[in-house]
Image (cartoon, rainbow, N blue to C red; front, side, top):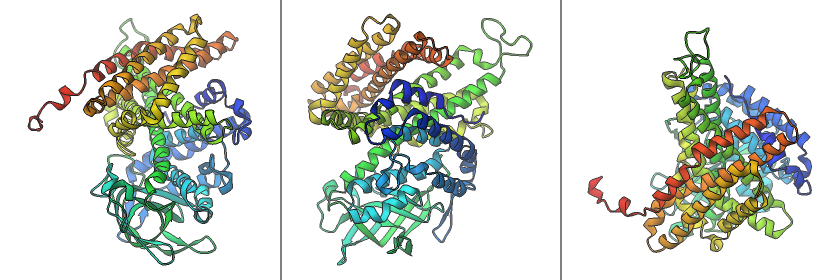
Length: 595
């Protein structure tokens, strides 16, 4: 079965759970009535399922082709699909209207982005990085640079990249060597090599705007001396059209495990002309605007690939017949039963379904806070929302990509030997998804960021606010018998996360290795807490619909999946807490020679 966007789930979250129409007084939301939202979702579903999804396998098999003249050809059909996306305005859905965007809530664009990534992850990275680059420029660049680049990037006629990694440095950006030499006209000459640059060269758009981290001559060592530059492939002319070629090239493409349809480039800059974004030596702060956006996008990729893999596995399990049900034949007129009758097959499918639907809700809930952080008139609301964005970003990136990849692994397992062949899509979903655990900061780095920076920020204000919000929800719904299993589960996992947080405060400071050893388990415990809260919100909403006489089986299905989450997934929280509190000794005591 071909990928089908879960539009019904999006409308449930946006209309019923998050009730985005109650924010109609805020910029963007005024134009996002549910009638409009449903039209956008239906249009996005048609484009992604009918145009992008058929190209997914094409991109995987053909890949991108580099030529000795340093050009790159994308797979057949990508250029036409990209032009169709630009024509429809999908790239500017939530972008600032000042630059040609539609200014709709970001939580709505999240739904489109998930559909796009599920349908064709490699393709979706081109506009995804462009949007992130335009956000960084909008945040930190001069008005002149904004006027020159943003209208083209928001429209999608120009694309964008981020250039961080070099052969000798990845996560440790303080080691970067790319240099920037100031010129008399206020520009800079950029020289150096960058690797693993997604979308660094392609044939989709007329220009590519590279955001490049470099060190100005004489700048301080380490991350304190890093600046950010716009370095376009073609230098814009006064009329805004691409002019002469800048002195930069794609020197080759990486041969990758997956996302073959996205050009992952080695970029060489040789006295290329660049413009400083923001102030000297303040490049990381601006680039982190793009990186944080990208990290949320990568968390979304985990959900998106997990959704696509789940759909394929569920369809296969209904169709493939092998063996008989343990409780007697369910297909008596056939030689065997469909494998979906077997408990272990259902376990794998429901593991995926429960985490994907809970993870999607967690992403949407967080994205709504991102909208509130940008536009709410109440400073306290903006502060809380911004705190949540900072706290949840590493959790969403790390936890949801771990679990999204697990859904892809289980999807292949449901397919059995068929999944290990290229006749079915299971292999591609698994291969494409694997990078999500690595890029934009590995999941281990996300976990360290969570326990080392985000928890302690502002005296722990964000996590304490999250605990208080959960306590408020529990108190508000106390006595609701139908919701009791969800309330009990949420109260229990919140207490475990709180215990883990206090343990880290006491033991992480005295021995930083304790924090490092606990970080991944803490991130997963936090993820389970977030999903437990989301399932409680969804269950409350679904039950209210049922009690109100709505016979739509969708709501009963939500409660069934939520029950599975409570009984079969949430108990993992106890194991994470136990491992976390074991400390670092068993990890750090073995000598290096023993490995």
